[in-house]
Length: 207
Length: 207
DNA sequence: ACTATATTGTACCGATTGGTAAATATTCCT
DNA sequence: AGGAATATTTACCAATCGGTACAATATAGT
Image (cartoon, rainbow over all chains, first blue to last red; front, top):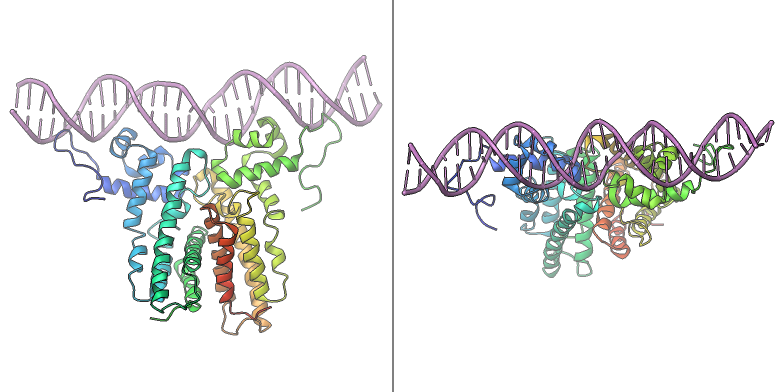
């Protein structure tokens, strides 16, 4: 919601010896690669360079750490998604989403795929809350895209008989499928081919 | 490879008190819903109606049980995939794959999604072998589809400038995305809309 | 009835899980 | 200099993880 987003920043007491955002970044990488359940506390602590009590003092618990990491993910590696909605035509919107996803999912500097897809897809009951949180985030993206496509339809960009909800679900499925492809080893060029295949048949007007 | 597929069937000793295939079916459901790592031995034993020593005696260990369960999955719930390749046109092939996936992924009698997609997507090192096995299975499907689409291209069903490998990867991504959508709660009708969206733009000749 | 073979249930194993108590260390404020 | 407040380290906790030893039980063949 607000500015520094991570801590109220205490003015008294022993100062924190690590950078919370850098540590969160490291935690994100672990969750990204191993999923919520596959990431153990020792895994996280080692990557973050801190001990468990520091982790708990700073982030609450594993679940809250994950949710914070997802927040960071949405603001950094996945930052292409919502801005893509601002483009002038549905074709440009979808193009930026798919190409952004291709770059992000197969970025050699990050784990493959998308943590919002693979962070907690099939898991035990103890991860139910996290799983639900990711489902909600995926749906939110789809709803936002749907609204943008509805606008495109209203503007005559998309044909009058098109179904924005179905198109948004279709693009959502392709994006999620690209994440799975990336975890299977697909590289950026291969994912861009998928994007291009979708775009070549897109029913909206070209840029 | 061969007939009874599960055990050499002993002729002496105390007879097994449970049906191996039924137990495997139950194990599959647990792995399907919770993933390889999220499914605990007690989870599996309770669903299978047996104790741990029986499980280990009959199936080896958790990893081998999972692989056996996947085998069963490919022969039952996912049995639509390879037969779909036999249809006369690429359009029919893809149609049967996508519609079969829509039905299978959102079948109310089974867990949502596809165990080959979500069984071990992001997990710890201890599941690396299983994860790799699933990657190989996903790729095998994609390769088979690619070969079928190459044949379609050779036959003039698909245009001369089409790229069978890219199309197969695209369909693979959609199939995997449909599995993610199903685990997020999408029903069969919604998944069929995704299938229909793909089919309406398919570059091959109609049936 | 007896033996060989295989499955069963119980009870256990060491390792790892997420999480914490308590003591120590470092800072700011008076 | 002396609190007050916070962070750090070490050591620990109960619960659960995958896996197994062992004794009891059930069958087929002799």
